[in-house]
Length: 292
Ligand code: GUN
Image 1 (cartoon, rainbow, N blue to C red):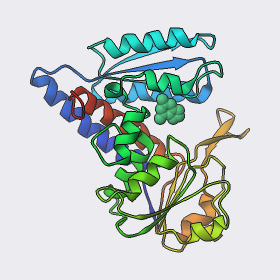
Image 2 (image 1 turned 60 degrees about the vertical axis):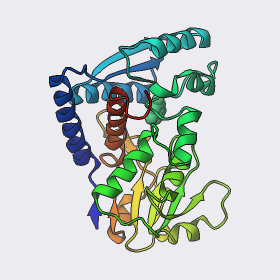
Image 3 (image 1 turned 120 degrees about the horizontal axis):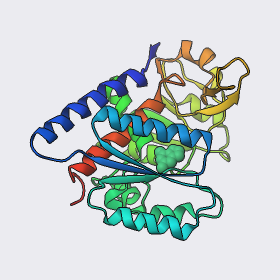
């Protein structure tokens, strides 16, 4: 069994990005600039955004953190998005999700200029991704593809099962695994209303779990030798942990790991790659690689 080390891979990629940025700067280009909007004080979102700002520093990017309290109105947020859309010093920006209930996430996502949508959530980017055109690809699926590539996991012609159909992970993951130039695999999406979930999962050469249910994937659902990618990061109360919780993946790692060919741990697998791919998207935005 091979452990797929997302933390180490992300560190290598960030060093590659930093080298490219310093090269750009030495040629008179300004540093890529990522802005992040954070609404409220959700613990998970605070951590994610802090890590995104730290990753920007590691990559030599400029970053801006824009904070609002929970009671910000949708109009205020949309006005700020409009300002960022027109701010030529900002290459890309994100609005950290989830947002408070009184704000429409879809309206917010669609208000972002797709040329600065480094999260890849805007329908223009989602649509272009689905038909294989150059675009910002959402960071988690992009990071998983990068891990599979760097660990030489053969995907072409293989059977891939994606557990979960969220807009952020499951759907784009399935699209990318399907595409000829990407995964080139035979893809099944398994969701809460799928019949015989266990049998479907057992067919997978590559099993990607993104449902947010700790320990859902048990040993009897995994084909021996399969590659297992665990996207789950649920906070589970743990009195012995320094912060009072630990992160739990969707896979019963202890019992699944011994029988699979390769597996990502939680933490240290997909998570660090996700932020790293946001950095790659920001670099592409800075270079106007996809859109002028
Ligand atoms: N919330 C959870 N994951 C993400 C992400 O990748 N981007 C944003 N903006 N919010 C998130």
